[in-house]
Amino acid sequence: MKKNTIKWAMYLNYFVFAILLNSVGIVILKAQRNYGVDELEASILEAFKDLPIAIVSFLIASFLPRIGYKRAMLIGLGLVYVACITMYFGNSFATAKLLFATVGVSFALIKVSVYSLIGTVTENQQEHNSLMSSIEGVFMIGIALAYFLFPAFNSETNPDAWLNVYWLLAGISGVSFAFLFLAKSESQVEIPGVNLLDDFKQMFQLMAKLLTIVFVISAFLFVMIEQGIMSWLPTFNSKVLHLPENISIMMASILAISLAVGRLAAGFLTKKINWIWILSACIIIAMLIVIFVLPKAVGLEVKTITSLSDIPLIGFAFPLVGLFIAPIYPLLNSVVLSALPKRLHSSMTGLIVVFSALGGTLGSRIIGYLFKNEGPENAFFYTLIPMLLLLFSFFILKKLTTTDENSSRN
Image (cartoon, rainbow, N blue to C red):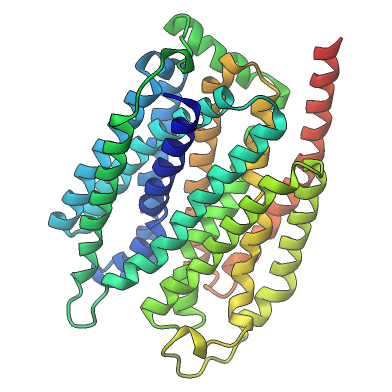
């Protein structure tokens, strides 16, 4: 595929999976209301999404170049097309588990392919940082759209009306499949592997590097924060702010929009400001929002609300934390991938996806546990712990990447 075609394919595929993958928070809320499960049981959907991502990424990342990135992405899109239709006809908590398991498997193929291809279409770290942030920004735009798509299909008289959204999602997946299928392929952008044994050795050798260890811990911590908040914000809006279901879901879109703006802005800022200062400032501001803004939102006296305009301004403030945590994930990924040879990008991406998936699963489970046992008004305060650990990890990564750069020059 030509470089411009590759970029458009990556944007479109990420957009499709953003809607599917991150609808988990909406389905968690639906599962509690439509399928009669409690908070802790509903949180298992995150595991059904993330564990297949982790397992498949680990198994296929090292030799995915042999399969071909285009072919891998087509397989992923085909699987979710079938899964969306199955969810419509299945209409059960078990079918929701199957849906997210399929989305997880497919996203593993998509993400490893996209992250590996970024290194082939960029020339330096600045370009890598910018494209990575832009792609992740498009991903967050897709997430924001999901928070409006699902309410659009809700009906007060028909509790199953929301399932019609899966026909639309199947259609979008089909369009993305057709776009990618018709794109011309050029073999030079596929990076050939050596052999399967060497491929797995490369992955395990990467895991032994201090740089990799610190990075995967950082990625794990970030996704724990992001997915924990994103998956449970609709429930927080419903149970703490006492918003109607549709408005609870649409309010959660503010977080996704904030994440999108933050990541797109990071694509420009990293061209002028060193990544360490951007990330340090962002995590400190995010911690201040949790400490000072969240208590005011929790203590908000909510009157009758029928539309977004009825919500006091402070109710919109906490989701703005997304604006400041947004640049963390793409910049961390870009910094580490840029420090490695391109032949190791697929293996490293596999590790990124594995630990990101584990972080997302654990984050959602922890927040689900806290919602049930500590109360929904207290659960999000515990995100301060991984935020503080992240701040320390930034400076360790900066030192390690600087050392590697100096060593490579010598």
